[in-house]
Length: 344
Image 1 (cartoon, rainbow, N blue to C red):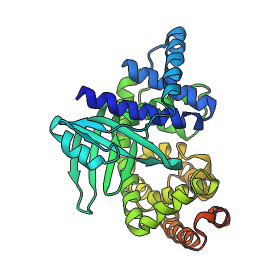
Image 2 (tube, one colour):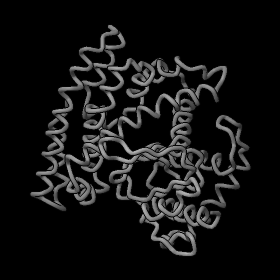
Image 3 (cartoon, helix red, strand yellow):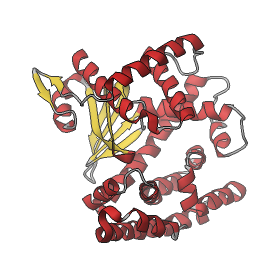
Image 4 (cartoon, one colour):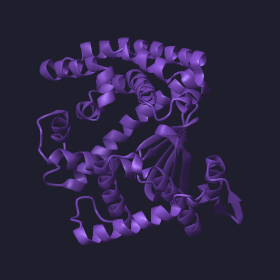
C-alpha cells in the first residue's frame, strides 16, 4: 500500500499547492505547524524546534510550488490505475487492507482527499453508510473531522482529536471565561492532556455524527440542486451564507435536539464555542438561548427555539434554491440579500 499512500499524499499536496494561499497568513502557518507535527509523528503538545520547523516549512513551500501546475494522478491499486475521484472504486479495492479513502469537493469547490485506517463501518437504517477512521496515512493541510459524501458519512477520529487540541491551545493564550472554558472544565487538561483529549474526542464523535446525519437528511430533502447552487456561487459571501444555513438546519434537526435531550452539557458548551462568526451572525438567538440556559439551567426554552429554528432554516434553504433556479450563475447577490434579511 505504500505506493498508494504516496500517490494520495501527492494529490493532497497538489490541493495544498492550489489552495493553501486561500487561508489567512496566521491560519496558514498554524495549519502548517500542525501538518509538520502530523508528518513527523510528534505528540500533541510536544515542543517544536523553531529551526526544525522553519527548515521544513522552506522545503515544504518549495515542494508545493513545484506542484502548482500538476494534475491529480490516478491511484495504483492491484496493478490498475483508478481515478482519484472514484472513491467507491478505491474503497472497494482497499477494504481488504483495512483502509478508507475519501475524495470530493469542500468549501469553495476545492478538491480534497484523505486516506486512513478504517476503525469501523456500518449501514444505518435511514440508508447512509458510516465510516469511522483512525490513524491517517495521507491528508491535506485542511482536515475536517467529518464529511458527508453522497450517502456516505466519514468521521475522522484523528482529525477530530487534532482539531480539539488546536481549540484548546488557542484558548490557552488568554484563558477567557467563555463557552470553551466551560467545556474544558469537564476534562483534566491541566493534569492529563492525552487522557483529556481522548475522552473529549470520544464524546464529540457522537456530536459530529449527529451533525453529519443532519447533513445527510438535508441532502435528501434539498437534492442535487443544492450542490449545483454551491458551484455557481462558490468563493462568494453567498456560498458562506448558504453553507451556514444548511449547517444550522442540520444542527437544529439533529445535533441540538440530541445534546439537549441527553444532557450532554460539555458538548453543548463546545458547540457554542465552535460557532463561527457567520453562523452567529445568522442565528444570534441561539447564543442568547445558550446564555439563558447557562444562567438558569433550564433547557426547555432552548429546545423550543431549536424546533422553531429547524422550520425557519428549512424554509430559507428552499428559498435559496428557488432564487438559484431563477437567477442561476447570477444568483449570488439575490441569495446574499435573502439570507441577510432572514436572521433569527
